[in-house]
Image (cartoon, rainbow, N blue to C red):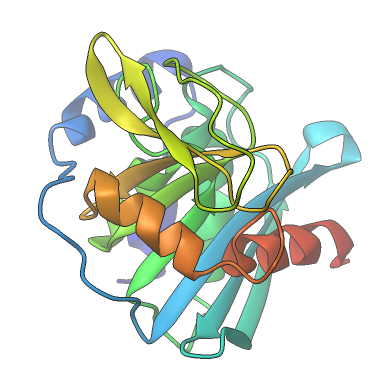
Length: 223
């Protein structure tokens, strides 16, 4: 994809973003089993600086088996979109897409710090990114945006369904024993059971899966 695909005509206000979200949401697919862990998995995270005026996106690509980082990139630019709950992908994705264009190693799966379909309109940042890139994505969030789930058991790997309006939209997943669980939901081209299994498979003894843990660290430390 050329850079202009990502940077031109990006919504600048709520009305434009609402229309784009409505038009793209129908393209999200969360059916079909995603078998096995792919060779390259990317983690995406975003930080803000200068009081939110600058967006910094980080992408770390890990190779499996082993889970070691083979490439990491950062991209920063002036923040383009205001903070609007439920529309955070419009605030964060321009910098993420700028970072994506720098990657030499293209992953087969992307894990995002944020929501997938566990979103009021089933279109969180992981879903939005997956549709734009036509790649499988998963949302891995530290807090709940929508839905309800019972607290899972204390051991790593225990989970309970995250449900909204009697529909399962993800999991409350314990990724480390006796540590606060994460909200995991498919973004695009990954089904609900696979989203849980893939996040667990990408763990490295921490609460966050290794791809997003490294991206989180990079986004906060890169100058």
